Image 1 (spheres, rainbow, N blue to C red):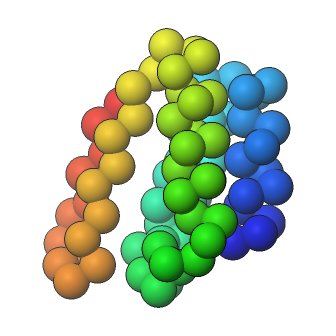
Image 2: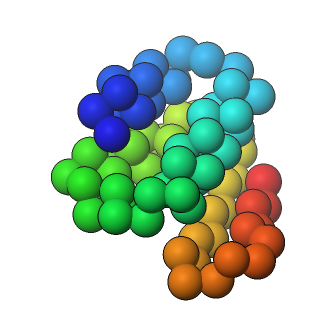
Length: 76
């Protein structure tokens, strides 16, 4: 998660498309490794994604339910 955290710190300097791809990458990782949600870096990563998205005018809503193996809904 430290790698994701370090990458998330630079999100305010990238395009909205890059922010979206990064958010999807983190979401996929957390889906496969749900225990990472308890990592101390996780809330900071989410905050960095949200802060960068707000600066670009994006609204990102991520819904994760590790107990359900159906679709994951992402609304941008």
